[in-house]
Image 1 (cartoon, rainbow, N blue to C red):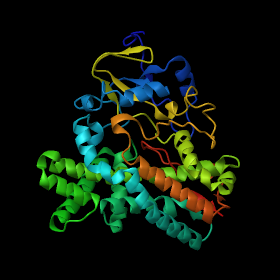
Image 2 (image 1 turned 120 degrees about the vertical axis):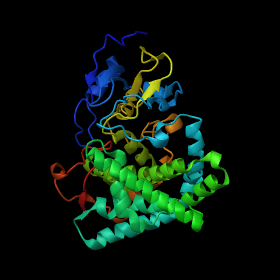
Image 3 (image 1 turned 45 degrees about the vertical axis):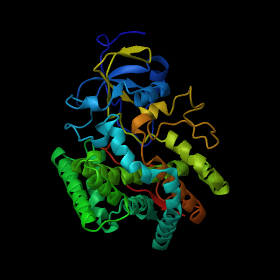
Length: 402
């Protein structure tokens, strides 16, 4: 174990601007030679960066690394302003108290109950895309409306308001795409909107997730404050669709640009669940590391002594390409049997909507494979445009033909 806190110069991070869905090759060298290095993000204090699967998993799962300790600190970040972290900025037991209130809506059993309705939505949306004619934009026809409608049904949010809250949700994943004052305005609008829906539930109770949260709050105020309820509901609405909206076209793009993969899935649709897991591992959704954990005491990590009070960032895309865990890690392998990827995180902050996202991705792929087996890009790959200034990577549009 070495103590290199003061001897190591922090390297500028991210190492490069995101390029499509490429993983920066420098991570491979770091995993091999320097699994924990000091980095400097555009804003905030320097931090350690963990790149190996074992170290990333340890930081995410070890309660000696705290999200709550970031409060009041100059947290490493890509934005000039410090965002309101909500439940992502809490540690157990406070984090656990809020998470339990929403967890029942996202259990494997509840998600499976939603599968038939999600399949109906996917069938309708793909049929609409086909009816509109080729070429068509998969993002606007399928990838955007499906996750929005599913999360609206689950929470009890009017789908007719989707244009408003989808726009406001960009503030949750923005780094530089929005000016600070615009991002704050969007967040304020989202919170005010959710507060209005909660007020409606008090007049007209419902059986959806927002209604259940209101009952939990009103029956026992110690379980949930009014502000916590508003922020939790807004966070679930935004996070519950934003990343899946981005991942659906990412998955289809990879399947259409990797040789023969789409054809194989058309021939073997039973591979879809395992293919989704491999795609989640393979695709670097995060554009940069974020949400630093602070060491509450001295901790040995990756052969380095992390001192109490120092922040640690984790690179999930790097961890998901760790050769010691995933043989031939840079290859998309639909036959991969063991796949402990960290696409949904790990530990207390493991994505509460992981099962929902998995189901939605499976259903969309199954529907596209069945209805449009000849699916292919309608433009050269070089003509595709990618989002920028966000915490996540994704396409602005995916023109396809069949």
